[in-house]
Amino acid sequence: MCYLIAKKFSDVGCIAVKAKRGKELAHLVSDLGLKTLEKGIQILTISDPETYGEYKPYTFVSSEKEFIAKVLDM
Image (cartoon, rainbow, N blue to C red; front, side, top):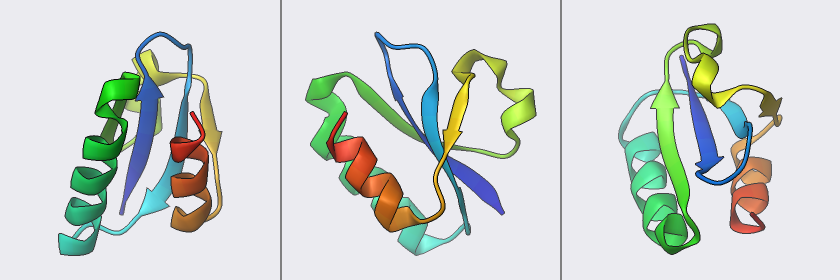
């Protein structure tokens, strides 16, 4: 298990969702990264939110679908 996060470079905090490692997640990270790069949004995975304080505060969402919608609205 890991966390998928989206961080807008100019903003404080990020959006996060629990995710399962694998090819589907890798494709999602790649696709979202390409769609949001020009907006200054970083898409990445982390193992533990407590370890990565530079992304705090975290806004956790309950599903990948909700995560994608919020990221595309950033």
